[in-house]
Length: 156
Image 1 (cartoon, rainbow, N blue to C red):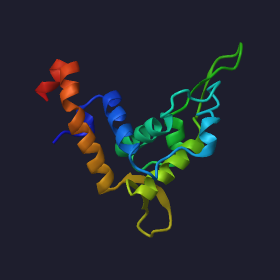
Image 2: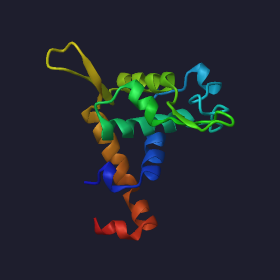
Image 3: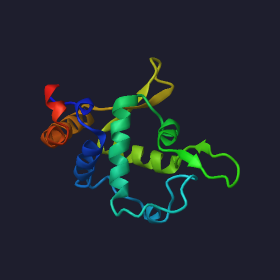
Image 4: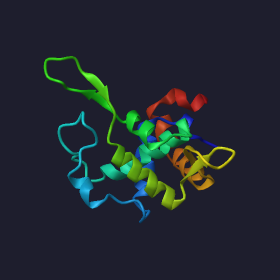
């Protein structure tokens, strides 16, 4: 079976975003039309489906980096802050966007919280079996297109 490690991220994220668009629990809040995705951005996103694309990217990152929390997830989507004549500095992305998307993915049952052995500390989010199967099905669906784009990929 094809996994997320076998296909390029751009093809996989586009496929997952289209699948997440069919889920009613994952939708952009009212403020998402006006919100920037981080302090390093000058304007809000112009794509109409940017919320689903970011949700797909976060789901993929949870699979790769789990357990991961909202703060570390926001750092994954950060970038260089333009500070005028001074050197650029790295800043994190929007924690509210990351936290809201992770809450929506949790309510859909695609990710869940991981706790320590005593059950008192939340260590971060991990994939559920439903989330893993969604990612594997999407990876299997884009495999022919990936092999067409990258002919050497068929060797693996």
